[in-house]
Image 1 (tube, each protein chain N blue to C red):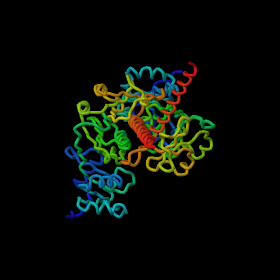
Image 2: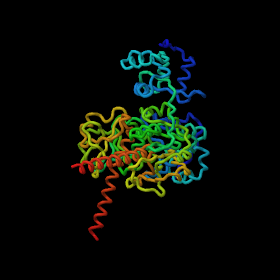
Image 3: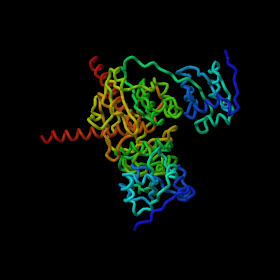
Image 4: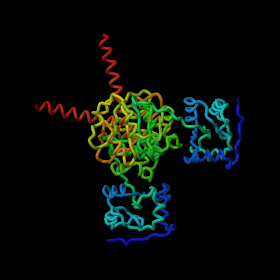
Length: 276
Length: 276
C-alpha cells in the first residue's frame, strides 16, 4: 500500500515543529523518535534496519540522483516534501541536501551474560567524544556499547554525526547501571587510571575484556573503578596532564587489536611450520 | 610600576566589546589577540609565558582563593574588574568563575630544518578535533605542530578548551605551506592512507618521523600525500568506514611511542647483560 505524499509549507505545522525539536536535540517530552540526516546515515538505516517511519525530503533535493532510489525504497513510509526554506532550518549540516528519516531508535536486547569484548562509558558528556568513542569501538570490532546515566544521548544529532554510522555496527544500551552489570560479566573489566596501574604495553590483552572509560573531567566514578580487574595506564609525556577520553580509548582498543592480530599471525605461522 | 585597576560596568565599553568578539571566536579584523579563560589556561600561561597584557576578573571571582595569587602576579598587567553580568556573558564555560587573560599568541620561530618528530595537519576544520590532536601530540612527547591554511584557528576558544594546555607544551606554527615544508624535512613523512600502505603495526617506527593527518572528510590532499615517504594504514573492522582523525592520530603516535619505549627497554637490558 502506498501512502499519499504530503507537502508541508508552514513552519507552524505540528509535525514540522516536532522534527525541528528532534533536530535541535531537545525533543518533546514523550517523543522518543530520532532524526537522521543525510545520505550516509539514511542509507545505513535502510541497509541495517529497513524502511523508516517517515521520510522527509526538501523540495529541491527531490531531483538529486541519490535521492531518487531512497524515495522509491520508502514507498511504504510516510513521505513528506518540505518547502526548501523549512528544510534549510531543519538541517544541521551546512549546505547539505535536505533528506531526513524520522525513526524509532533500536532497543537491542542486552545479552544475559557479557562474554565478548565491549565498551562501557560512565557519564561521557560531550556529544563529539561519545560519537567518536562509538566510532572507534566499532572500528576496533566491538559489537556492544553500554552507556551509564549521565552520558550524552546516543541518538542525538551531534552524536549521530560524529559516530559516522557506528550506531548501526553496534548494539547501544543506554541508561545502564554499570555497577550492577559487573555481576553479569564473565570477562575482565579494564579501566585506565594512574594509581596501582600496569603499563598498557606490557599488559597481555589477547583475551577479550570490557573497556571502561569515564567522564571528561572526573574519569570513572571511584566505586566503579574499584570493581575493575585490570587497571592500566598509557605512558605519556609529562608535558600535559592527560589525554582526551576518546584518544585514550583509541590507544587502548587498538593496542588490544594489535596484540590480537600479532597472536593470530603467530598461531598461523606456527601451524604452517608444524604441517611442513 | 603598578597600573591602576579599572572597573567596567557597561556592555558598550569598547574593550569589553572587543573581548566578547575574541571569546565568541570572531575577533575584530586586525585583532590578533586571544582570550584565555579559567584557572588551568591562565596558570599555564603564567608558567610558560609570564604575565599577560591584560587580566580580566569578574567581580565575585575576585574573592576566590585561587584568584588572589593570579591577581598579585599580574600587578604589572592591565587589571580589569568586570561587573558580574558582563563577565557571565563573556564566559564560554558553564558556571565557571570568570577569570580571563588577554594575550598575544606566541609566534614561535620555525626551525631551519625539521629533524625531530612533529605533527602536520592539513585542513583539520573541527575545533574539537584540532584541540584533541594538539593534546595527543603533546602527550606523545612531540614539540612542534605545523598547521596548513584551512585548519581551524589554533588559538580560538574552542581549540584552546579541547587542547587542555597542549598549546603551552608545543610550538604551534599556523598557515604553513606544508608542501614547501617537505623540502626542509630531514626525517620521513608518514601519512595514513588505504592505498599502497603498510600495516601500522609491522612498520618500524623507532626513528622519529613527521606525522601528517588531513581534513575530516577528504583526508590529506593528494599532492601532499604523494610526498609522503611512509604510507601506513590502521587495520580496522569492516563494520565502519574510517576512524575519526584524532583517534587515528592517537593510535599512530602511541604505536610509535610503544615501539620507542620497547626499544629503549631492550637497549637498557642488553647493556646491563654486557656489563655483567
